[in-house]
Amino acid sequence: MSYFKIYKINAINSTNEYLKTLYLKKRIHDNFLVMAENQTDGKGQRSSYWESEPKKNLTFSIYKDFRKNKLKNPFIINLIISISIVETLKKYNLPNLKIKWPNDILSASKKISGILIENFFQRNFLSSSIIGIGLNVNQIIFKKAKNAVSISSITRKKIDLLEVLNILTRKISFKIDNINNLKFENLIIEYESLLFKKDILSKFKINNSVIDGRIIGVNQNGKLRVLIKNEIIKEYSSSEIKSYIDSPT
Image (cartoon, rainbow, N blue to C red; front, top):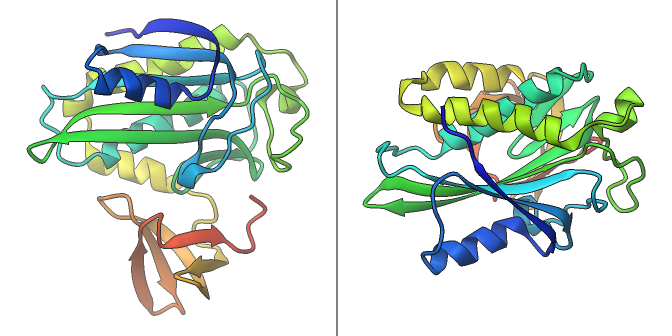
């Protein structure tokens, strides 16, 4: 089992951007993890802002080299990371853990974690990934993210940040080390079982139109499968679906 080499930084604008700079300068190596005590300009999906109080949460990014694995479908990385985060949070007995497609983890319908993955390719194969994770651990008050929650705010206990990091990185490392032996179909099934609002009638803003539909799962490439008017199944990328209109998050 491989473990990540951790590099701690007191303050930085974005751990993903830091690793991307190293990648472009060819000064990066496999299994490198950069962790910031204070991330001043953390990014989420669609360049949204990730709020994090200094020294209260986990904000880190991992660089992983996949050239030896000959992977063609990068969605497996999203599956591994999302499931690993949920498994970690289960250790703290958090209620109603769900994955809000495409990149958020919820507890009791409130955001507790976000994922931002940037992939690089060579000859149609995934060559490497920068995996950014924000996980709310000890922050209690969220000034901008009104619907955010943390492990501590739910359990009413102060949580050891390094303990959470150790549990999570062990789970990620184990899955990535065995990525060529993992059954993609099983990961999809597990991911779909955790999907927020699955099989529940919801409103979606899609290409500037509001439609009613039910999430029924994801396809092999990570697109969201939505049943519309109980008749038609359509598949959407994250750039096509802007929001769940009636969702609390």
